[in-house]
Image (tube, rainbow, N blue to C red):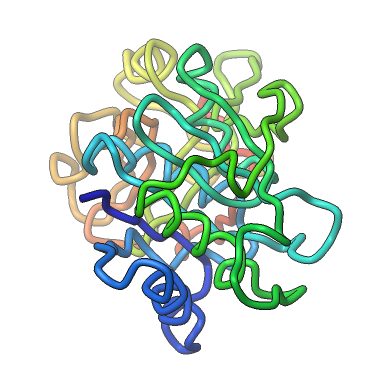
Amino acid sequence: MRVLVLLTDFGTRDPYASLMRAAARRIKPDIVIEDLTHGIPRYCITCGAYVLYTSYEWFPEDSIYVSVVDPGVGSSRRGILVKVKERYFIGPDNGILWPVIEENLEDSEAFALDEEKVSPWEVSSTFHGRDVFAPAAARIARGEDPSSFAYRIELGSLRTLSLTYSRDIEGGKCFKVIYIDSFGDVVLSSRGEEAEKVLSTKRAKVFLEGREIGEAEATRTFSLVSRGEIALYVNSSGFLELSVNMGDFAEKFGVEIGDEICLKQ
């Protein structure tokens, strides 16, 4: 049985996440639903893209993912469904799904959701998570073909979003902050060989928006530096990360999503 995995910026105060689950169960009462998170920072599409990209492979290979960080709901932006091998990804066409798609271009096919066909009830202009995306997922889960409620589109027409960015400066590199977790650890827009190369230096001066804020020790994990010191390492998802051991890096230095952090030898 396919698993429906939900990711949103709805939080837990309001009924929105529960109403998405209820909507899916109206169409397929026995659907299995997992909440990846409803704690994405409000409107942070990049944060949602990062969490989806670094999490999706941990679920069964035929899972269905609904990702709703959707500040453009009700506008001209499309709702899309993308099949990636045996997995389905559903959400707004605002880039949140793109990192997953980009890594699997040869195995992906895209559809635009037809709002008049996808939902058996009236679609609101402000809650497509309940009225469009959850119903689409439930219909896939009960075995329907996407062509019954969506039409094929070109992958090249989709909105893109990149989780990697860097620029060279004298003596170092600069990156963007793409995610901050609940511990205040800061994820940077670098992974793979580039991230490993950054770690090849034992220590790096850290600059936030051009202002030096401290020195980080390159290490395998934050616990290997002294309490209160800055650690620089590759996180469990393969991205470069900064933290304060037993502290909150983002709070201590006032870091926000989208800020530029530079590391110099």
